Image (cartoon, rainbow, N blue to C red):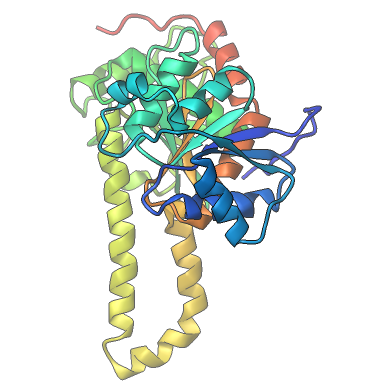
Length: 354
């Protein structure tokens, strides 16, 4: 993973954090932001109820110079309809944070609240990059070789056409290259078989499109179809699919990871000899948990927008919030939006899919 650098910037980054989202409350967001701020020279602007946030800062006895509060009077709840909330709650923490990015008062937005609201508010406020039809959530996932695969799309656009997946492949390739530091990332198309003729109609048409972009130098390295079992093997650096399949894949992976850790813990408690092994195995188990824990990646960028929006898990803990802050810094410092805009503008429109 590329570390954050500010060498090309003449000022610290400004990160707007929607502090009122998340299942665990603003206190967890405050702790996560403080953890991130202690290791960065970026300025973190926590947006939300001023009294609650100031009290949380006071109770922790910390108020670093690079953490500030922007007070708002409204909150978009998990139960709110995103588009309705955007219109009816103009002073919601998420809406204000998005407007700050639009106005140049912040370089990136982080939200761990209502995912649908984060997508709608960001899209309506920031707009799409010219040439991008639909945005996509780029979710980093671990691979068995210690690397990272980017899953595109993890839930932003559930109904796609081949041209959408073409754009996802291009944007995911940029993110993998710029943020993950992978030269010429390999792009795979998620299917139920490796053969080109496998898959539903969307997958078959997309395979033909990605394999023949009509360009002498393709904008990304397409390696063909990959199956679900290949996602975590490191077979590809970017795996492309529609948002419905991607979200199911993501949630299934999270469930399997949690089940695996639970089963290991149960087995270690079953017999005397396994109980004796538990203590020396704890460091290894902690390392394993970190490798598969969503909190280690913090959040996923919504790519295709005229700005950086990092969407975190609703149940993000302190470590997840801190890592979401780092993800925002990486995306800004590596100029992800600018590079996507440049490559989209230079890439000829893909040939129509039949």
